[in-house]
Amino acid sequence: MRTKHSLSPPMYFIVLIFWLSTTTFAAENESPITEMDSLIALEQYQQAYELGRDALEEWEGDPEFDYIYGLAALESGNANESVFALERVATTSTEAGLRSLARLDLARAYFVTNNLDAAESLFNLVLTSNPPPNVQQNIEIFLQLIESRKNTKKPTLNWTIASSIGSDSNANSATSNGLIDTPLIGQIELDPAGQETKDTFSNTTLSMAYKYPFNRNSSMNFSLNLAHLNNFDTDQFDIDNARGELSYNWGNEVHRFKHGISAGKVNLDQNGFQKSFALNSSWQRAGKNGWYQSLSGSYTKIRYDTNNGGTLNDLRDVDQVLLTGGVTKIAGPLTHTVNIYTADEDPEATSGGDHNGRSFTGLAYSLLYSMSAQHTPFLRTSFQKVEHDSQHPVFFNTKRSGETASVTLGWFWLVTRNFMVTGEAAFTDNSSNIALFDYNRFKYQAGLRYQF
Image (cartoon, rainbow, N blue to C red):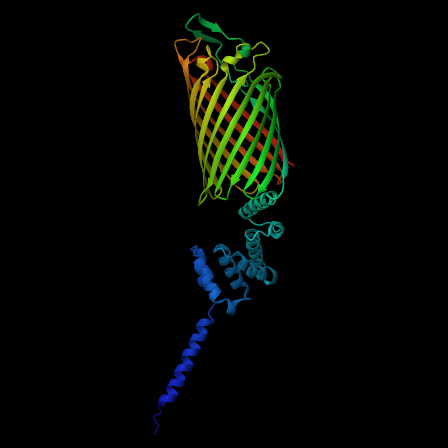
Protein backbone atom coordinates (compact mmCIF):
# COMPACT_ATOMS: atom_id res chain seq x y z
CA MET A 1 0.00 0.00 0.00
CA ARG A 2 1.44 3.34 -1.17
CA THR A 3 1.63 6.20 1.13
CA LYS A 4 0.42 9.52 -0.29
CA HIS A 5 2.94 12.31 0.29
CA SER A 6 2.33 16.05 0.26
CA LEU A 7 4.51 19.09 0.86
CA SER A 8 3.99 20.98 4.00
CA PRO A 9 3.29 24.71 3.45
CA PRO A 10 6.79 25.86 4.46
CA MET A 11 8.44 23.38 2.12
CA TYR A 12 6.07 24.36 -0.71
CA PHE A 13 7.12 28.01 -0.51
CA ILE A 14 10.81 27.06 -0.45
CA VAL A 15 10.44 25.05 -3.68
CA LEU A 16 8.40 27.83 -5.34
CA ILE A 17 10.99 30.47 -4.50
CA PHE A 18 13.79 28.22 -5.81
CA TRP A 19 11.92 27.64 -9.09
CA LEU A 20 11.21 31.36 -9.61
CA SER A 21 14.82 32.35 -8.93
CA THR A 22 16.06 29.71 -11.37
CA THR A 23 13.69 30.95 -14.07
CA THR A 24 14.70 34.58 -13.48
CA PHE A 25 18.38 33.69 -13.60
CA ALA A 26 17.90 31.91 -16.96
CA ALA A 27 16.02 34.91 -18.37
CA GLU A 28 18.69 37.32 -17.19
CA ASN A 29 21.36 35.19 -18.81
CA GLU A 30 19.58 35.05 -22.18
CA SER A 31 21.64 36.96 -24.77
CA PRO A 32 20.16 40.35 -25.85
CA ILE A 33 22.07 40.24 -29.15
CA THR A 34 19.12 39.05 -31.29
CA GLU A 35 16.76 41.71 -29.99
CA MET A 36 19.39 44.45 -30.30
CA ASP A 37 20.14 43.35 -33.85
CA SER A 38 16.42 43.56 -34.72
CA LEU A 39 16.18 47.05 -33.26
CA ILE A 40 19.22 48.18 -35.27
CA ALA A 41 17.66 46.76 -38.43
CA LEU A 42 14.64 48.98 -37.69
CA GLU A 43 17.01 51.94 -37.10
CA GLN A 44 15.88 52.13 -33.48
CA TYR A 45 19.43 52.73 -32.30
CA GLN A 46 18.63 54.42 -29.01
CA GLN A 47 16.45 51.49 -27.87
CA ALA A 48 19.16 49.02 -28.89
CA TYR A 49 21.76 51.05 -27.02
CA GLU A 50 19.67 51.18 -23.84
CA LEU A 51 19.00 47.44 -24.00
CA GLY A 52 22.72 46.76 -24.36
CA ARG A 53 23.62 49.18 -21.60
CA ASP A 54 21.31 47.31 -19.19
CA ALA A 55 23.06 44.04 -20.07
CA LEU A 56 26.57 45.49 -20.18
CA GLU A 57 27.76 44.23 -16.81
CA GLU A 58 26.87 40.66 -17.68
CA TRP A 59 27.75 40.48 -21.39
CA GLU A 60 30.69 42.89 -21.70
CA GLY A 61 33.64 40.97 -23.19
CA ASP A 62 31.52 38.81 -25.49
CA PRO A 63 32.74 39.83 -29.00
CA GLU A 64 29.33 39.64 -30.68
CA PHE A 65 27.66 41.62 -27.91
CA ASP A 66 30.47 44.19 -27.86
CA TYR A 67 30.13 44.71 -31.60
CA ILE A 68 26.34 45.11 -31.57
CA TYR A 69 26.52 47.34 -28.51
CA GLY A 70 29.33 49.43 -30.04
CA LEU A 71 27.35 49.88 -33.27
CA ALA A 72 24.20 50.90 -31.38
CA ALA A 73 26.20 53.36 -29.28
CA LEU A 74 27.81 54.89 -32.37
CA GLU A 75 24.54 55.33 -34.27
CA SER A 76 22.71 56.72 -31.22
CA GLY A 77 25.29 59.46 -30.61
CA ASN A 78 27.30 57.81 -27.84
CA ALA A 79 30.55 57.62 -29.78
CA ASN A 80 32.92 57.51 -26.81
CA GLU A 81 31.27 54.37 -25.42
CA SER A 82 31.29 52.94 -28.93
CA VAL A 83 35.07 53.33 -29.11
CA PHE A 84 35.64 51.27 -25.96
CA ALA A 85 33.38 48.42 -27.11
CA LEU A 86 34.65 48.28 -30.69
CA GLU A 87 38.29 48.45 -29.62
CA ARG A 88 37.74 45.26 -27.62
CA VAL A 89 36.31 43.46 -30.65
CA ALA A 90 38.93 44.79 -33.09
CA THR A 91 41.79 43.59 -30.91
CA THR A 92 40.46 40.39 -29.29
CA SER A 93 37.95 38.75 -31.63
CA THR A 94 39.18 35.48 -33.14
CA GLU A 95 36.64 35.68 -35.97
CA ALA A 96 38.17 37.50 -38.95
CA GLY A 97 34.86 38.75 -40.39
CA LEU A 98 33.70 40.24 -37.10
CA ARG A 99 37.12 41.78 -36.51
CA SER A 100 37.00 43.48 -39.94
CA LEU A 101 33.51 44.88 -39.30
CA ALA A 102 34.62 46.18 -35.91
CA ARG A 103 37.66 47.91 -37.45
CA LEU A 104 35.50 49.68 -40.02
CA ASP A 105 32.98 50.95 -37.46
CA LEU A 106 35.76 51.77 -35.01
CA ALA A 107 37.32 53.99 -37.69
CA ARG A 108 33.97 55.77 -37.98
CA ALA A 109 33.83 56.18 -34.21
CA TYR A 110 37.35 57.65 -34.20
CA PHE A 111 36.22 60.09 -36.90
CA VAL A 112 33.14 61.16 -34.91
CA THR A 113 35.25 61.70 -31.78
CA ASN A 114 37.71 63.74 -33.90
CA ASN A 115 40.60 61.26 -33.47
CA LEU A 116 41.49 61.88 -37.10
CA ASP A 117 44.92 60.23 -37.21
CA ALA A 118 43.58 56.99 -35.71
CA ALA A 119 40.57 57.05 -38.06
CA GLU A 120 42.76 57.61 -41.13
CA SER A 121 45.15 54.82 -40.14
CA LEU A 122 42.33 52.34 -39.54
CA PHE A 123 40.45 53.23 -42.74
CA ASN A 124 43.63 52.66 -44.75
CA LEU A 125 44.14 49.33 -42.95
CA VAL A 126 40.64 48.22 -43.97
CA LEU A 127 41.35 49.23 -47.59
CA THR A 128 44.31 46.81 -47.70
CA SER A 129 41.85 43.93 -47.20
CA ASN A 130 40.16 44.78 -50.54
CA PRO A 131 36.61 45.29 -49.21
CA PRO A 132 33.55 45.42 -51.55
CA PRO A 133 33.35 48.41 -53.95
CA ASN A 134 30.62 50.19 -51.98
CA VAL A 135 32.70 49.94 -48.80
CA GLN A 136 35.77 51.25 -50.64
CA GLN A 137 33.74 54.20 -51.92
CA ASN A 138 32.50 55.08 -48.42
CA ILE A 139 36.03 54.83 -47.04
CA GLU A 140 37.31 57.20 -49.74
CA ILE A 141 34.61 59.70 -48.77
CA PHE A 142 35.67 59.49 -45.12
CA LEU A 143 39.33 59.92 -46.06
CA GLN A 144 38.45 63.06 -48.02
CA LEU A 145 36.47 64.38 -45.05
CA ILE A 146 39.42 63.65 -42.76
CA GLU A 147 41.75 65.52 -45.07
CA SER A 148 39.28 68.41 -45.23
CA ARG A 149 39.05 68.58 -41.42
CA LYS A 150 42.80 68.54 -41.07
CA ASN A 151 43.06 71.32 -43.61
CA THR A 152 40.69 73.52 -41.61
CA LYS A 153 43.40 73.90 -39.00
CA LYS A 154 46.07 75.40 -41.25
CA PRO A 155 46.41 77.28 -44.53
CA THR A 156 46.43 75.03 -47.60
CA LEU A 157 47.60 75.47 -51.16
CA ASN A 158 46.52 73.06 -53.91
CA TRP A 159 47.40 72.95 -57.59
CA THR A 160 45.55 71.07 -60.30
CA ILE A 161 46.59 70.60 -63.91
CA ALA A 162 44.21 69.18 -66.50
CA SER A 163 44.77 68.55 -70.18
CA SER A 164 42.52 67.11 -72.86
CA ILE A 165 42.52 66.49 -76.58
CA GLY A 166 39.52 66.16 -78.85
CA SER A 167 37.55 67.10 -81.94
CA ASP A 168 35.04 69.92 -82.42
CA SER A 169 32.63 69.98 -85.36
CA ASN A 170 32.02 73.72 -84.95
CA ALA A 171 34.92 75.45 -83.21
CA ASN A 172 33.46 78.95 -83.74
CA SER A 173 29.78 78.15 -82.99
CA ALA A 174 28.79 79.47 -86.42
CA THR A 175 26.06 78.67 -88.93
CA SER A 176 26.63 76.12 -91.67
CA ASN A 177 24.67 78.31 -94.14
CA GLY A 178 26.73 80.05 -96.81
CA LEU A 179 23.94 82.43 -97.86
CA ILE A 180 21.89 84.55 -95.46
CA ASP A 181 18.78 86.56 -96.32
CA THR A 182 18.75 90.16 -95.08
CA PRO A 183 15.77 92.56 -95.27
CA LEU A 184 17.84 95.41 -96.70
CA ILE A 185 20.07 93.91 -99.45
CA GLY A 186 18.72 90.41 -99.86
CA GLN A 187 21.05 87.45 -99.80
CA ILE A 188 24.63 87.89 -98.68
CA GLU A 189 27.42 85.36 -98.90
CA LEU A 190 29.27 84.66 -95.65
CA ASP A 191 33.03 84.61 -95.50
CA PRO A 192 34.24 81.02 -94.87
CA ALA A 193 35.75 82.22 -91.57
CA GLY A 194 32.22 83.15 -90.45
CA GLN A 195 30.83 79.71 -91.19
CA GLU A 196 30.97 76.44 -89.28
CA THR A 197 34.62 75.40 -88.90
CA LYS A 198 35.67 71.91 -87.86
CA ASP A 199 38.92 71.45 -85.96
CA THR A 200 40.80 69.25 -83.52
CA PHE A 201 42.04 70.86 -80.34
CA SER A 202 43.89 70.59 -77.06
CA ASN A 203 42.76 72.26 -73.87
CA THR A 204 45.04 72.79 -70.86
CA THR A 205 44.03 74.28 -67.52
CA LEU A 206 46.15 75.15 -64.50
CA SER A 207 44.25 75.87 -61.27
CA MET A 208 45.42 77.12 -57.90
CA ALA A 209 43.36 77.19 -54.68
CA TYR A 210 44.55 78.82 -51.46
CA LYS A 211 42.58 78.64 -48.21
CA TYR A 212 43.33 80.58 -45.04
CA PRO A 213 41.09 79.39 -42.18
CA PHE A 214 40.19 81.76 -39.36
CA ASN A 215 38.53 78.89 -37.49
CA ARG A 216 36.64 75.72 -38.30
CA ASN A 217 33.63 77.67 -39.61
CA SER A 218 35.16 80.51 -41.60
CA SER A 219 38.00 81.10 -44.05
CA MET A 220 39.35 83.37 -46.74
CA ASN A 221 39.81 81.65 -50.11
CA PHE A 222 41.64 82.64 -53.28
CA SER A 223 41.47 80.74 -56.56
CA LEU A 224 43.12 81.27 -59.92
CA ASN A 225 42.39 79.46 -63.19
CA LEU A 226 44.47 79.74 -66.36
CA ALA A 227 43.22 77.96 -69.49
CA HIS A 228 44.51 77.69 -73.04
CA LEU A 229 42.46 76.29 -75.93
CA ASN A 230 44.57 75.53 -78.98
CA ASN A 231 42.93 74.61 -82.28
CA PHE A 232 45.30 72.64 -84.49
CA ASP A 233 44.22 73.82 -87.97
CA THR A 234 43.49 77.49 -87.32
CA ASP A 235 44.63 79.99 -84.72
CA GLN A 236 41.70 82.35 -85.26
CA PHE A 237 39.61 80.75 -82.52
CA ASP A 238 42.35 79.98 -80.00
CA ILE A 239 41.32 81.18 -76.54
CA ASP A 240 43.35 82.15 -73.46
CA ASN A 241 41.27 82.59 -70.33
CA ALA A 242 42.35 83.82 -66.87
CA ARG A 243 40.03 84.13 -63.89
CA GLY A 244 40.70 84.90 -60.24
CA GLU A 245 38.36 84.98 -57.24
CA LEU A 246 38.75 86.16 -53.65
CA SER A 247 35.99 85.04 -51.28
CA TYR A 248 35.00 84.86 -47.62
CA ASN A 249 33.39 81.56 -46.61
CA TRP A 250 31.50 80.98 -43.37
CA GLY A 251 28.76 78.85 -41.81
CA ASN A 252 28.27 75.50 -40.10
CA GLU A 253 27.63 71.89 -41.11
CA VAL A 254 24.11 72.77 -42.31
CA HIS A 255 24.37 76.27 -43.78
CA ARG A 256 27.35 77.58 -45.74
CA PHE A 257 27.73 81.10 -47.18
CA LYS A 258 30.19 82.56 -49.65
CA HIS A 259 30.74 86.20 -50.62
CA GLY A 260 33.41 87.23 -53.08
CA ILE A 261 34.74 89.26 -55.97
CA SER A 262 36.15 87.90 -59.22
CA ALA A 263 37.87 89.21 -62.32
CA GLY A 264 38.47 87.59 -65.68
CA LYS A 265 40.20 88.24 -68.98
CA VAL A 266 39.76 86.47 -72.33
CA ASN A 267 42.16 86.71 -75.27
CA LEU A 268 41.16 85.52 -78.74
CA ASP A 269 44.06 84.50 -80.97
CA GLN A 270 46.43 86.20 -78.47
CA ASN A 271 44.59 89.52 -78.79
CA GLY A 272 42.49 91.21 -76.13
CA PHE A 273 38.83 90.27 -76.45
CA GLN A 274 36.88 90.54 -73.19
CA LYS A 275 37.24 91.58 -69.53
CA SER A 276 34.86 91.07 -66.63
CA PHE A 277 34.50 92.02 -62.98
CA ALA A 278 31.91 90.43 -60.69
CA LEU A 279 30.41 90.44 -57.20
CA ASN A 280 29.26 86.97 -56.14
CA SER A 281 27.28 85.56 -53.23
CA SER A 282 25.90 82.08 -52.53
CA TRP A 283 24.18 79.94 -49.89
CA GLN A 284 24.20 76.16 -49.54
CA ARG A 285 22.16 74.02 -47.18
CA ALA A 286 22.81 70.39 -46.30
CA GLY A 287 19.40 68.84 -45.61
CA LYS A 288 18.43 65.41 -44.35
CA ASN A 289 18.26 62.14 -46.29
CA GLY A 290 20.71 63.28 -48.96
CA TRP A 291 18.98 66.55 -49.90
CA TYR A 292 20.97 69.73 -50.57
CA GLN A 293 19.74 73.17 -51.66
CA SER A 294 21.59 76.21 -52.98
CA LEU A 295 21.02 79.80 -54.08
CA SER A 296 23.51 82.11 -55.74
CA GLY A 297 23.58 85.53 -57.30
CA SER A 298 26.11 87.64 -59.15
CA TYR A 299 26.48 91.07 -60.68
CA THR A 300 29.01 91.17 -63.53
CA LYS A 301 30.33 94.00 -65.70
CA ILE A 302 31.38 92.57 -69.09
CA ARG A 303 33.52 94.76 -71.32
CA TYR A 304 34.89 94.05 -74.81
CA ASP A 305 38.26 95.18 -76.14
CA THR A 306 38.15 97.94 -78.80
CA ASN A 307 41.75 97.47 -80.01
CA ASN A 308 42.99 95.45 -82.99
CA GLY A 309 40.31 96.77 -85.33
CA GLY A 310 37.38 96.20 -82.97
CA THR A 311 36.49 99.84 -82.52
CA LEU A 312 32.76 99.07 -82.23
CA ASN A 313 33.19 96.22 -79.76
CA ASP A 314 32.11 98.44 -76.89
CA LEU A 315 28.57 98.25 -78.29
CA ARG A 316 28.57 94.71 -76.84
CA ASP A 317 29.35 95.88 -73.29
CA VAL A 318 26.70 94.74 -70.80
CA ASP A 319 26.00 94.60 -67.07
CA GLN A 320 24.67 91.18 -66.10
CA VAL A 321 22.56 90.10 -63.12
CA LEU A 322 22.38 86.31 -62.71
CA LEU A 323 20.34 84.30 -60.17
CA THR A 324 20.56 80.51 -59.76
CA GLY A 325 18.70 78.04 -57.56
CA GLY A 326 19.64 74.39 -57.23
CA VAL A 327 18.57 71.14 -55.60
CA THR A 328 20.72 68.01 -55.19
CA LYS A 329 19.55 64.57 -54.07
CA ILE A 330 21.99 61.78 -53.24
CA ALA A 331 20.22 58.42 -53.48
CA GLY A 332 22.63 55.57 -52.99
CA PRO A 333 25.07 55.53 -55.92
CA LEU A 334 23.05 58.19 -57.81
CA THR A 335 23.47 61.95 -57.44
CA HIS A 336 20.78 64.10 -59.09
CA THR A 337 21.20 67.87 -59.46
CA VAL A 338 18.73 70.36 -60.93
CA ASN A 339 19.56 74.05 -61.42
CA ILE A 340 17.26 76.81 -62.61
CA TYR A 341 18.74 80.16 -63.57
CA THR A 342 17.67 83.49 -64.97
CA ALA A 343 19.69 86.51 -66.04
CA ASP A 344 19.30 89.99 -67.45
CA GLU A 345 21.98 91.84 -69.44
CA ASP A 346 21.64 95.59 -69.90
CA PRO A 347 23.77 97.22 -72.63
CA GLU A 348 26.24 99.83 -71.49
CA ALA A 349 26.44 101.76 -74.77
CA THR A 350 24.40 104.99 -74.97
CA SER A 351 23.34 104.28 -78.55
CA GLY A 352 23.60 101.55 -81.11
CA GLY A 353 23.99 98.65 -78.71
CA ASP A 354 20.44 98.17 -77.47
CA HIS A 355 20.06 94.97 -79.49
CA ASN A 356 22.81 93.37 -77.35
CA GLY A 357 20.67 93.70 -74.26
CA ARG A 358 18.96 90.40 -73.50
CA SER A 359 17.42 88.17 -70.88
CA PHE A 360 17.73 84.41 -70.65
CA THR A 361 16.35 81.59 -68.53
CA GLY A 362 17.62 78.05 -68.31
CA LEU A 363 17.22 74.64 -66.74
CA ALA A 364 20.10 72.20 -66.21
CA TYR A 365 20.11 68.63 -64.93
CA SER A 366 23.02 66.35 -64.12
CA LEU A 367 23.23 62.72 -63.03
CA LEU A 368 26.30 60.99 -61.58
CA TYR A 369 26.37 57.26 -61.06
CA SER A 370 29.05 56.00 -58.67
CA MET A 371 29.65 52.53 -60.01
CA SER A 372 32.60 52.10 -57.66
CA ALA A 373 35.19 54.14 -55.82
CA GLN A 374 37.06 54.54 -59.13
CA HIS A 375 34.42 54.83 -61.86
CA THR A 376 31.68 57.48 -62.21
CA PRO A 377 29.76 57.88 -65.47
CA PHE A 378 27.70 61.05 -65.78
CA LEU A 379 25.00 62.77 -67.82
CA ARG A 380 24.38 66.51 -68.19
CA THR A 381 21.51 68.16 -70.06
CA SER A 382 20.45 71.80 -70.31
CA PHE A 383 17.92 74.01 -72.04
CA GLN A 384 18.10 77.81 -72.36
CA LYS A 385 15.77 80.39 -73.87
CA VAL A 386 17.01 83.86 -74.87
CA GLU A 387 15.09 87.04 -75.72
CA HIS A 388 16.86 90.19 -76.93
CA ASP A 389 15.65 93.65 -76.00
CA SER A 390 15.34 95.33 -79.39
CA GLN A 391 15.55 94.79 -83.14
CA HIS A 392 18.82 93.70 -84.70
CA PRO A 393 20.46 96.54 -86.71
CA VAL A 394 20.90 94.34 -89.80
CA PHE A 395 17.74 92.28 -89.41
CA PHE A 396 15.80 95.37 -88.38
CA ASN A 397 12.38 93.76 -88.69
CA THR A 398 13.15 91.22 -85.99
CA LYS A 399 13.94 91.04 -82.30
CA ARG A 400 16.41 88.21 -81.98
CA SER A 401 15.34 85.20 -79.86
CA GLY A 402 16.51 81.65 -79.63
CA GLU A 403 16.78 78.39 -77.76
CA THR A 404 19.81 76.28 -76.92
CA ALA A 405 19.70 72.61 -75.92
CA SER A 406 22.69 70.46 -75.02
CA VAL A 407 23.46 66.97 -73.75
CA THR A 408 26.78 65.59 -72.50
CA LEU A 409 27.78 62.03 -71.66
CA GLY A 410 31.05 61.35 -69.85
CA TRP A 411 33.10 59.23 -67.50
CA PHE A 412 35.41 59.91 -64.55
CA TRP A 413 38.01 57.27 -63.75
CA LEU A 414 39.80 57.96 -60.46
CA VAL A 415 43.04 56.03 -60.93
CA THR A 416 44.52 57.22 -57.63
CA ARG A 417 43.39 59.82 -55.09
CA ASN A 418 45.23 62.54 -57.05
CA PHE A 419 45.03 61.30 -60.64
CA MET A 420 41.93 61.10 -62.84
CA VAL A 421 41.19 60.11 -66.44
CA THR A 422 38.19 61.81 -68.07
CA GLY A 423 36.22 61.43 -71.27
CA GLU A 424 33.09 63.07 -72.62
CA ALA A 425 31.00 63.67 -75.72
CA ALA A 426 28.67 66.66 -76.07
CA PHE A 427 26.05 67.83 -78.57
CA THR A 428 24.65 71.37 -78.72
CA ASP A 429 21.81 72.66 -80.87
CA ASN A 430 21.14 76.40 -81.10
CA SER A 431 18.04 77.58 -82.92
CA SER A 432 17.25 81.23 -83.63
CA ASN A 433 14.60 83.23 -85.44
CA ILE A 434 17.52 84.77 -87.38
CA ALA A 435 19.19 82.12 -89.56
CA LEU A 436 22.63 83.67 -89.11
CA PHE A 437 22.66 82.45 -85.51
CA ASP A 438 21.48 78.89 -86.13
CA TYR A 439 24.10 76.23 -85.48
CA ASN A 440 24.77 72.82 -83.99
CA ARG A 441 27.95 71.43 -82.54
CA PHE A 442 29.34 68.01 -81.65
CA LYS A 443 32.46 67.77 -79.50
CA TYR A 444 34.26 64.86 -77.89
CA GLN A 445 37.42 64.81 -75.81
CA ALA A 446 39.54 62.69 -73.47
CA GLY A 447 41.87 64.01 -70.82
CA LEU A 448 43.91 63.69 -67.65
CA ARG A 449 43.71 65.57 -64.36
CA TYR A 450 46.30 65.60 -61.57
CA GLN A 451 46.16 67.37 -58.21
CA PHE A 452 49.29 68.13 -56.21
